[in-house]
Image (cartoon, rainbow, N blue to C red; front, side, top):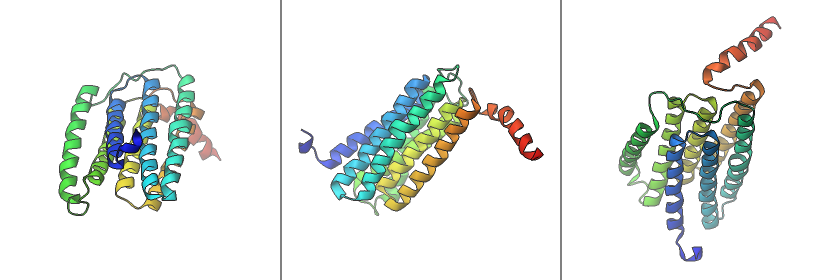
Length: 226
Protein backbone atom coordinates (compact mmCIF):
# COMPACT_ATOMS: atom_id res chain seq x y z
CA UNK A 1 0.00 0.00 0.00
CA UNK A 2 2.81 2.43 0.90
CA UNK A 3 4.39 1.77 -2.50
CA UNK A 4 1.48 3.61 -4.13
CA UNK A 5 1.91 6.71 -1.92
CA UNK A 6 4.32 9.35 -3.31
CA UNK A 7 7.33 10.20 -1.14
CA UNK A 8 6.15 13.81 -0.81
CA UNK A 9 2.87 12.68 0.72
CA UNK A 10 4.66 10.39 3.17
CA UNK A 11 6.94 13.25 4.23
CA UNK A 12 3.97 15.59 4.70
CA UNK A 13 2.24 13.03 6.93
CA UNK A 14 5.42 12.59 8.99
CA UNK A 15 5.84 16.37 9.32
CA UNK A 16 2.28 16.81 10.58
CA UNK A 17 2.79 14.02 13.12
CA UNK A 18 6.06 15.60 14.28
CA UNK A 19 4.26 18.90 14.84
CA UNK A 20 1.56 17.10 16.85
CA UNK A 21 4.18 15.54 19.12
CA UNK A 22 5.70 18.99 19.69
CA UNK A 23 2.30 20.21 20.88
CA UNK A 24 2.01 17.16 23.15
CA UNK A 25 5.40 17.95 24.69
CA UNK A 26 3.99 21.35 25.69
CA UNK A 27 0.83 19.75 27.07
CA UNK A 28 2.16 16.69 28.92
CA UNK A 29 2.37 16.76 32.72
CA UNK A 30 3.21 13.11 33.28
CA UNK A 31 6.98 12.74 32.91
CA UNK A 32 6.68 9.13 31.72
CA UNK A 33 4.27 10.19 28.97
CA UNK A 34 6.56 13.13 28.16
CA UNK A 35 9.51 10.80 27.58
CA UNK A 36 7.39 8.51 25.39
CA UNK A 37 6.22 11.50 23.36
CA UNK A 38 9.81 12.63 22.87
CA UNK A 39 10.83 9.12 21.77
CA UNK A 40 7.95 9.08 19.26
CA UNK A 41 8.96 12.51 17.98
CA UNK A 42 12.55 11.31 17.51
CA UNK A 43 11.32 8.19 15.70
CA UNK A 44 9.36 10.36 13.27
CA UNK A 45 12.43 12.55 12.63
CA UNK A 46 14.45 9.38 11.99
CA UNK A 47 11.79 8.22 9.51
CA UNK A 48 12.02 11.56 7.68
CA UNK A 49 15.79 11.08 7.33
CA UNK A 50 15.23 7.48 6.21
CA UNK A 51 12.70 8.60 3.59
CA UNK A 52 15.26 11.04 2.19
CA UNK A 53 17.86 8.25 2.16
CA UNK A 54 15.53 5.97 0.19
CA UNK A 55 15.06 8.77 -2.34
CA UNK A 56 18.65 10.09 -2.56
CA UNK A 57 20.76 7.06 -1.44
CA UNK A 58 23.01 9.44 0.51
CA UNK A 59 24.80 7.49 3.26
CA UNK A 60 24.92 10.52 5.55
CA UNK A 61 21.12 10.46 5.67
CA UNK A 62 21.16 6.81 6.71
CA UNK A 63 23.70 7.58 9.43
CA UNK A 64 21.56 10.45 10.73
CA UNK A 65 18.52 8.15 10.81
CA UNK A 66 20.40 5.39 12.67
CA UNK A 67 22.05 7.82 15.11
CA UNK A 68 18.69 9.43 15.87
CA UNK A 69 17.07 6.01 16.29
CA UNK A 70 19.75 4.71 18.66
CA UNK A 71 20.44 7.88 20.63
CA UNK A 72 17.04 9.54 20.82
CA UNK A 73 14.53 6.72 20.58
CA UNK A 74 16.31 4.21 22.82
CA UNK A 75 19.34 5.52 24.75
CA UNK A 76 18.27 8.97 25.99
CA UNK A 77 14.68 7.95 26.95
CA UNK A 78 16.18 4.97 28.81
CA UNK A 79 18.48 7.29 30.78
CA UNK A 80 15.60 9.67 31.48
CA UNK A 81 13.43 6.84 32.79
CA UNK A 82 16.29 5.60 34.96
CA UNK A 83 16.67 9.06 36.50
CA UNK A 84 12.92 9.27 37.01
CA UNK A 85 12.92 5.87 38.76
CA UNK A 86 15.36 7.24 41.36
CA UNK A 87 13.29 10.36 42.04
CA UNK A 88 10.20 11.00 44.10
CA UNK A 89 8.40 12.88 41.34
CA UNK A 90 6.27 11.55 38.52
CA UNK A 91 4.53 14.67 37.23
CA UNK A 92 5.53 18.24 36.42
CA UNK A 93 2.64 20.45 37.52
CA UNK A 94 4.58 23.69 37.94
CA UNK A 95 4.52 26.30 35.20
CA UNK A 96 6.11 29.68 34.63
CA UNK A 97 4.67 32.41 32.43
CA UNK A 98 2.72 30.07 30.14
CA UNK A 99 0.28 27.28 30.99
CA UNK A 100 -0.49 24.41 28.57
CA UNK A 101 -3.51 26.05 26.90
CA UNK A 102 -1.80 29.42 26.46
CA UNK A 103 1.36 27.62 25.26
CA UNK A 104 -0.63 25.85 22.54
CA UNK A 105 -2.24 29.12 21.44
CA UNK A 106 1.17 30.81 21.26
CA UNK A 107 2.53 27.78 19.35
CA UNK A 108 -0.22 28.03 16.73
CA UNK A 109 0.56 31.72 16.28
CA UNK A 110 4.28 30.89 16.03
CA UNK A 111 3.70 28.29 13.32
CA UNK A 112 1.64 30.72 11.23
CA UNK A 113 4.15 33.51 11.83
CA UNK A 114 7.12 31.36 10.84
CA UNK A 115 5.23 30.11 7.78
CA UNK A 116 4.55 33.66 6.60
CA UNK A 117 8.19 34.68 7.07
CA UNK A 118 9.62 31.58 5.38
CA UNK A 119 7.14 31.71 2.52
CA UNK A 120 8.39 35.17 1.63
CA UNK A 121 12.08 34.40 2.26
CA UNK A 122 12.32 30.91 0.75
CA UNK A 123 9.58 31.17 -1.86
CA UNK A 124 11.95 32.18 -4.64
CA UNK A 125 14.97 30.19 -3.43
CA UNK A 126 12.99 26.98 -2.80
CA UNK A 127 9.90 26.82 -5.01
CA UNK A 128 9.15 23.29 -3.73
CA UNK A 129 6.55 23.81 -0.97
CA UNK A 130 7.56 20.62 0.82
CA UNK A 131 10.98 22.05 1.68
CA UNK A 132 9.39 25.27 2.93
CA UNK A 133 6.99 23.23 5.06
CA UNK A 134 9.85 21.16 6.50
CA UNK A 135 11.84 24.30 7.34
CA UNK A 136 8.79 25.93 8.95
CA UNK A 137 8.01 22.92 11.13
CA UNK A 138 11.68 22.53 12.09
CA UNK A 139 11.95 26.14 13.28
CA UNK A 140 8.53 25.93 14.97
CA UNK A 141 9.66 22.82 16.85
CA UNK A 142 12.78 24.61 18.06
CA UNK A 143 10.71 27.57 19.27
CA UNK A 144 8.20 25.27 20.98
CA UNK A 145 11.07 23.45 22.69
CA UNK A 146 12.33 26.83 23.89
CA UNK A 147 8.86 27.52 25.30
CA UNK A 148 9.07 24.28 27.28
CA UNK A 149 12.41 25.38 28.74
CA UNK A 150 11.10 28.76 29.88
CA UNK A 151 7.61 27.70 30.97
CA UNK A 152 8.34 24.57 33.02
CA UNK A 153 10.21 24.22 36.32
CA UNK A 154 11.34 20.60 36.54
CA UNK A 155 14.86 19.93 35.35
CA UNK A 156 13.91 16.81 33.39
CA UNK A 157 11.15 18.67 31.55
CA UNK A 158 13.61 21.40 30.59
CA UNK A 159 15.99 18.73 29.24
CA UNK A 160 13.19 17.37 27.04
CA UNK A 161 12.67 20.94 25.83
CA UNK A 162 16.33 21.10 24.79
CA UNK A 163 16.01 17.72 23.08
CA UNK A 164 12.89 18.82 21.22
CA UNK A 165 14.76 21.93 20.08
CA UNK A 166 17.51 19.67 18.74
CA UNK A 167 14.98 17.58 16.82
CA UNK A 168 13.67 20.80 15.29
CA UNK A 169 17.19 21.83 14.28
CA UNK A 170 17.78 18.41 12.69
CA UNK A 171 14.49 18.56 10.81
CA UNK A 172 15.27 22.07 9.56
CA UNK A 173 18.72 20.91 8.46
CA UNK A 174 17.34 17.93 6.55
CA UNK A 175 15.31 20.27 4.36
CA UNK A 176 17.66 23.27 4.13
CA UNK A 177 21.23 22.84 5.41
CA UNK A 178 24.24 20.81 4.27
CA UNK A 179 24.33 17.20 5.52
CA UNK A 180 27.86 17.15 7.04
CA UNK A 181 26.96 20.24 9.08
CA UNK A 182 23.79 18.56 10.39
CA UNK A 183 25.77 15.48 11.39
CA UNK A 184 28.36 17.49 13.30
CA UNK A 185 25.69 19.46 15.16
CA UNK A 186 23.74 16.27 15.93
CA UNK A 187 26.75 14.50 17.46
CA UNK A 188 27.82 17.60 19.42
CA UNK A 189 24.41 18.28 20.93
CA UNK A 190 23.87 14.60 21.76
CA UNK A 191 27.16 14.57 23.67
CA UNK A 192 26.21 17.72 25.60
CA UNK A 193 22.77 16.30 26.47
CA UNK A 194 24.26 12.98 27.58
CA UNK A 195 26.75 14.78 29.84
CA UNK A 196 23.89 16.82 31.32
CA UNK A 197 21.79 13.70 31.91
CA UNK A 198 24.68 11.88 33.56
CA UNK A 199 25.26 14.93 35.77
CA UNK A 200 21.62 14.89 36.85
CA UNK A 201 21.89 11.15 37.51
CA UNK A 202 25.10 11.50 39.52
CA UNK A 203 23.96 14.42 41.69
CA UNK A 204 20.39 13.23 42.11
CA UNK A 205 18.86 16.60 41.27
CA UNK A 206 15.23 15.77 41.84
CA UNK A 207 13.18 18.88 41.29
CA UNK A 208 13.99 22.27 39.76
CA UNK A 209 16.96 23.99 38.19
CA UNK A 210 17.56 25.87 41.45
CA UNK A 211 18.61 22.59 43.06
CA UNK A 212 21.84 22.72 41.08
CA UNK A 213 23.25 25.45 43.31
CA UNK A 214 23.26 23.71 46.72
CA UNK A 215 24.45 20.46 45.15
CA UNK A 216 27.34 22.05 43.26
CA UNK A 217 28.47 24.40 46.08
CA UNK A 218 30.38 21.66 47.99
CA UNK A 219 31.99 20.54 44.73
CA UNK A 220 33.13 24.09 43.98
CA UNK A 221 34.61 24.47 47.47
CA UNK A 222 36.47 21.17 47.04
CA UNK A 223 38.08 22.43 43.81
CA UNK A 224 39.08 25.70 45.52
CA UNK A 225 40.86 23.77 48.27
CA UNK A 226 42.77 21.81 45.65
